[in-house]
Length: 230
Ligand code: NI
Ligand code: MN
Image (cartoon, rainbow, N blue to C red; front, side):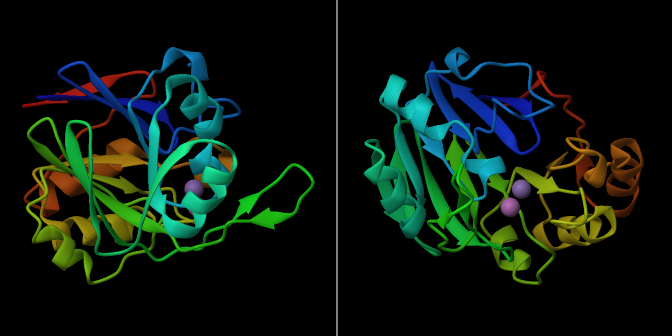
């Protein structure tokens, strides 16, 4: 069993058997998030790419909780220099963590971390995450456009696909419905929308399309709410 809590934007907390994993923990500065970084004590933090709305509060949380951060090698190297424990991987690699594994898969996007002074570090490449945890296989697509190799990712046997639908920076709803057909998961959770005005979308309309046009069922999880899968 896994409990997946949506923290707003593209940030999630997973819990199973008392073990907590954070995905893209953009908490402070996230207009959709009512939590504080202090609310979490994960053993593992998984990051899809270096953009600030995904790295979020990783350094602060990892320093306090001792969490290991798993991400793409260039970003992992940068984070290690900030004094936290990391495991670096790249597309195709599977990495074990407490309670599960993550396989890094491709994502079509850009990747760079911007410091307060505007300088950019740790570009690397973006990844999607196939997370096996609590008996579920969950695909966090990260920020990406539609690509036909999502069909290969679907061959992993995806229970839950967490897909961006905001458009502008990622897939919009039309392409996300096409992605669902490639991935063929049981459940779809939309994200990366409605955080800012530029990425407002109608999640109910998206759910109706997923439920009627694909084999999957979409679940709308509001920020602060949880979805439990067994
Ligand atoms: Ni991004
Ligand atoms: Mn993003």
